[in-house]
Length: 209
Image (cartoon, rainbow, N blue to C red; front, side, top):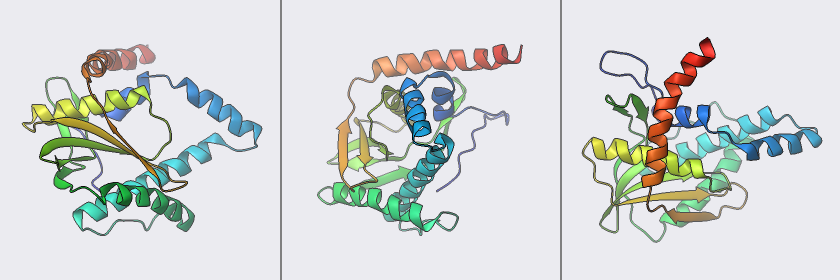
């Protein structure tokens, strides 16, 4: 998959959607999660990084399946690849009964006016409708997912790609099952992301004072 690098027409760095959301939105559930791991004698950073690797591998496998290109897995452990393949099985189950017509996948977009970038996982046609589809390997369905997908929808539509539906596919890396969601009414999520776009540069300046 291509690595994200966002810059405006003058070469200035632009923050990505996940960077903006992750830098501002607190995730209180992670505090309890980290505490629970600590009680078990585990370092939450190692567990987090492993989960991140597994998610990346699963995306690579999906990328390879949909593009016909060989996924790049050489830098990952066999255990993490094995776990990611369980999640990938969930994706295969999902696509078994539908036809995914890919228009673009992991394409980098930037917005010159609002000064941000983003990389939607997949955009194409499902059942004659233009669909933005995001892949997740975690268990929870969190509000920040709506922020992320609303921002991707804006990037797509502002570049001339119509979006009839926004969907999220969650694949389980423990049992290979999947959950498929249609995310409707993202107006509130987009309004909130617009506020984050204003807060993000202010926070960067404040933290430097």
